[in-house]
Image (cartoon, rainbow, N blue to C red; front, side, top):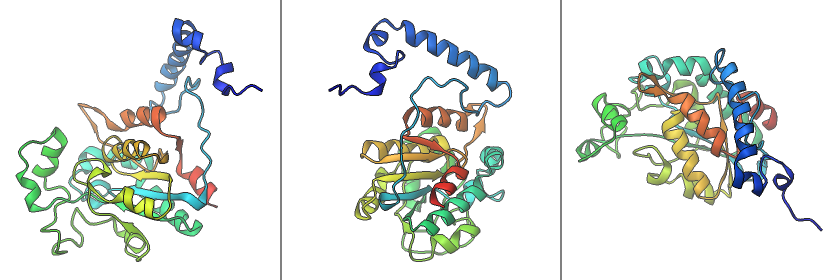
Length: 270
C-alpha cells in the first residue's frame, strides 16, 4: 500500500525537483509573471497561478475560537492616533465592519471569542531599548492607561475598544486576555486561555496585520494551533518604509493554515 502524500506525485514537489530546482524555478517564474500582471490592477489579489499547495483546513466548531487582536480606537477609528498610518488600509478592507461581523457570527455559532488587547502603563515608559514602532507608540501615547488596577480615563480613550464591539467584548462571555506588550501573545495569557477552553483551531483577525496579528499567528502556530487568518478582518500601516498589509499577506499565504475572507468565515459559521 502506498503511504505517500499527494505532494509526492505532484511534479512541483518531488524530491528530484527539490534537488535540481528546475521544475520549481519554472513554476515559480510562471507564477511570478501572472502575479506581476495582476498586481498592476490589485497588488493584494491572490496569485492567479499559486505555487504553494492549497489549504486543507476544515473548521471544527467543537474545537475552534475567534481571536481578535487590538480591536481598539487608536487603530480603528479616525480619532485614533494611528489613523494617519492605517486608515487607508482599514477603509479598503472594511475592517471595522468585518471584525463586528466575525464576532457576531462566532457568537451565533457558539464559538469562544478571545480578545488580545494592547495596553501601556506608566512603568512601560521606562524601557531601556525599543524597536522603531515601540518608540513611535510610546511617543504618541498609543494604548495608554493610567495603571493596571484602574480604569480611570479608559472610557473613550485610544486604548478603549471600538464602541460597536463593546456589547460583545464586555458581555461576560468573551475571553478578555491580559495585555500583550510588544506584538505577540508571549506576554499575555491568550494561549493558556485557549488551552483551558479546549481550543486548538483559531480564526484570527484584528490589528495590525504585519505586527500584532502576524505575531499572534506565528506564536499560535509554534504552540501547535491550526490558524486561519481573515484577510479582510485586518489592515496595516502603509508608509514610505513599506506596505505593512502587503507584507502581512505574503506571510499569511506562506505560513497560515488557511487565509479566508469574512464572507467565507460567516458562511462556515452559518
